[in-house]
Length: 62
Image 1 (cartoon, rainbow, N blue to C red):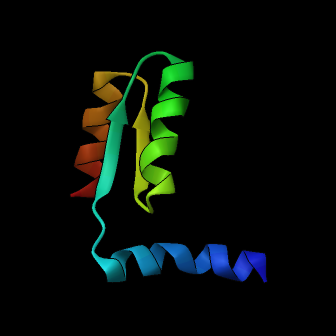
Image 2: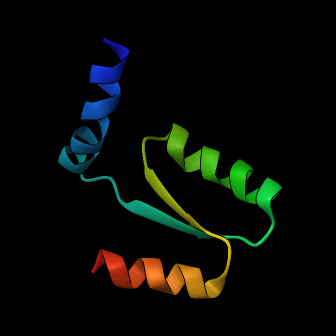
């Protein structure tokens, strides 16, 4: 049952119209901490360790 609920979360987030978040932070510990906050609020969070990686992720999403 838990796997079914988890697999339906992305479609639920889209249905609710929640924005996706791109977090660019070079240090691992703050990146993990900052990623958790919007995830708890139901947002999809994409993370990048460098500005270049963030730009690549933005290009991939368009």
